[in-house]
Image: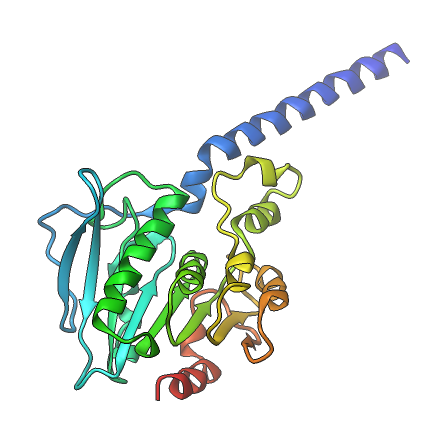
Length: 269
């Protein structure tokens, strides 16, 4: 019996040490799990195959927003402000731009701090502040009835904030999450993630303050942001808002589906 008790005590200590070690690693490395930027040098030349204009927006002495403006094909119907996902920089998301510019919309695609040529340290407040700055620029050029705010993956929470804090015509979210806390809890359910998460980005809360129409796309086979996380957002939607479930849709293939194209055609007619 003494041997069994010692073994039990030994393995209990191992489990506790392992649990605590993983928890500490998750806490200190969470920024690396959430953000996967690819920095670019200031003299990097973008090789986009479609027309574009690169601009640098000085925020303060250390922070600059790098943003690419893609002009429409023909007279401009309006503007799409596109908040991209957590991987690399604008170069990864440029292939999604033609579906907007071909319909006559200008596209603005900013990089987050530390992504591409954008400079400065990254934190949640700064993501919101820079989104608000871009929205003010957008409203200085276009009437609010001509501005669409589009968020993909990580960018959906930032897009929801921007739409809650400014005027626009429509908010479109592709593969959104309920909150970063909720996403964290999905992957690390055995830890008190609500206390551990440095980023909250409560998409559900922002949606409650969005007055314009909202359209959400999410696939049932998304292995990055679970469908269940997005589904919770329905409780924050208005009666006329749309939550579009794409059966079998994954995280990065929704734009290739027929239902996505049909809905986007109706929104951007």
